[in-house]
Image: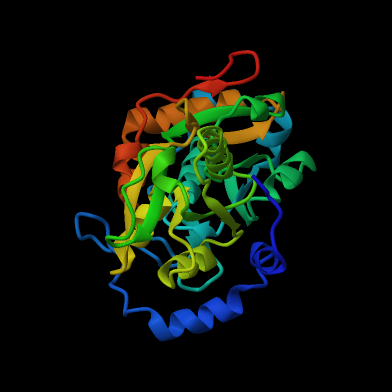
Amino acid sequence: MNRAMDRRTVLRAAGLGGLGLLSLAACTQPEQPQPTREDGVPFDLSPEQNSRIRSDVDPAARALLPENIAAGGVLTVGVLNTSPPLSFSATDDVTPIGSEVDTAYLVADKLGLELNPQVTSWENWPLKLGAHEYHATFANVGVTEPRLKLYDFATYRAAYMGFLARKGQGPVVESPDDISGRKLSVTPGTNQEKIVMAWNEQLEAQGKEPAALDLYLDNTNAVLALAAGRIDYYLSPFPTGSYYAATRDDLEVRGKISAGWPKSTLVAATTLKNSGLARPFQAALQSAITSGEYRAALTRWGLGEEFLPESLIVTEETGMP
């Protein structure tokens, strides 16, 4: 498949193509409902986050910390701000909130550290982590074999992708045949892009028309393009697709697959290889799982079904979970 992007798509991918889409969306978007969970409870979108689940120090987990980090007293982590309800901005458009941020707070609490969340982008978190600007990344990162060469992981959530679409438009996506000849959007450099590319290879090998791929770095622009009919599906993390479906009258999730297709994978706290942080992170996460605090943190963002009963350390030595 020709992966070259035209100028318009490049501008969109660079975040420079949204003005026209925003103008169109302002004319065509229906009034959107108050964001709520499936049980009808409104999401807490405030910068104060008074409903955030917090915890106390777990001495056994803290004892596993590298001495320099324990002495420093601060845990600096990279988070995104464009993927509700995982990680996005509060109503002040500044404060990072979401389930990924809450998970990072729980880990910091268990380790007796002050959390310093730093907003980054998907394409920049590896650079920031590699430059030692962050101790870790909590950014819906799925464990993959190539990533194991660079990072150590402590798992905390199941990982699925969802095909967001206009209501009643197009088939429910269950296999490559369902995207043949359709136009899809993904974020470049993600598992979503790899999945669509692999599906297109299968389609082309069978003599079928592949899906056209439109790349967006920004969830907002991708959703606006979808609502305007410029694309047929937006393949995103399932929680993000579900959030947009719950907060808009015109969109729904029409298909769900493993984020590690054709295998399964897990979302994990991401640390540099041999940094010594995967073990204390796993201990902190397991402590929060055992106490029930982690399940409560997921539930307040409507993600209870992605709860895992166990946190695992995953490294190149252990292999994929």
